[in-house]
Length: 206
Image 1 (cartoon, helix red, strand yellow):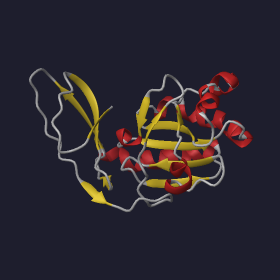
Image 2: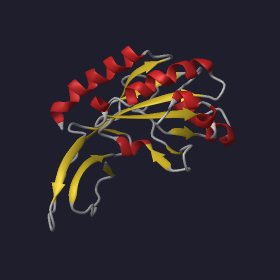
Image 3: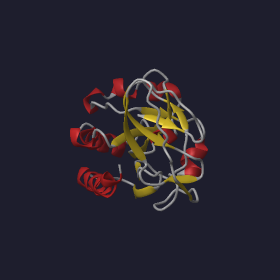
Image 4: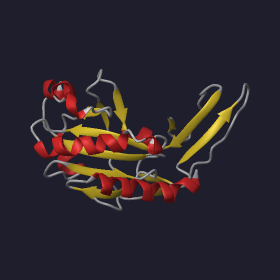
């Protein structure tokens, strides 16, 4: 997937691309994602449309964007790069037993091929220091987690921007950047139902 911030000219090269656009303080209107194929010397103009909306922690608000390092190799992930996808943020911490119980179900959904083109999942640890986060997957191999775990030093992401008072807290963001669901604990059935509802809503717009 390739994300752009308009107005911007980019050279992505020959091939088939999934493209999204992001503008701070705005939803990315439908379609939020474009699937394009470029041959040599092709050019393409994408006219993205946006709607201003207030940022907030609850359903119906714009999700606060962030730039955070991952547990794998400190690779940087930016939430704004995933406009056009459904994104689950799962807030957790190392000693959270309910998070341990919930993660295998989230992993099952994340690994389901029917959602591969739509879904991204991030575990977000805004409590522990880096050493604990970095070894989380090694210390819990039975979980089989394949999605990135992100580390956040700035407590304001958890306490202010997403108002996470307890873990697990799960926030599901739609392809436009809007928060659509918020759970303090989520079952696999609830998560699948919400994702499939959003796919049904947005698949005709791409």
